[in-house]
Length: 185
Image (cartoon, rainbow, N blue to C red):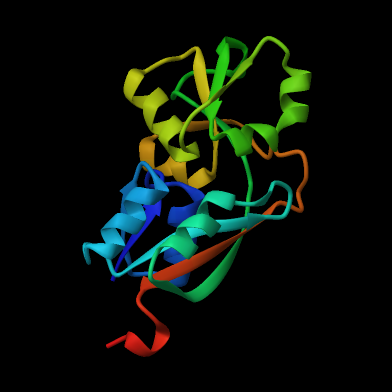
């Protein structure tokens, strides 16, 4: 089964897709609208989208996309969100001047930035995409906030574990298919 996600491999959406369908082929998309487009064109069998976070609230864009497309929700998966500062192999936190991540992830790590005023938070389209970028650029002065899976996939090292402000940080994901439940083969 092919499941499209918004974001790169190693993202929390990737983790949710594999939890729902362990042998799935996950297809990364830059934008959520791209994932819905792939589903509409039958390039994938389903998409996995975050719909609600226990700290940040609803993902309004996804409610809009659900309403605008002929889709149905097949199942739901809840993931505990654990954020880590991930850098280049051989780097250390003292070298880091900026940290990239999704804006919601940055907002969920405010205490870390208050304790490290010399590090600039920079919004990026995806948590795992931020790890991928810093590893590809080999930038020792940059790091990313993402999940452990992103560090594993792209060869990053965890510089600081568990930088989220609240350990009760969960995201509810929906696996969405095209059509209606009765139209499934």
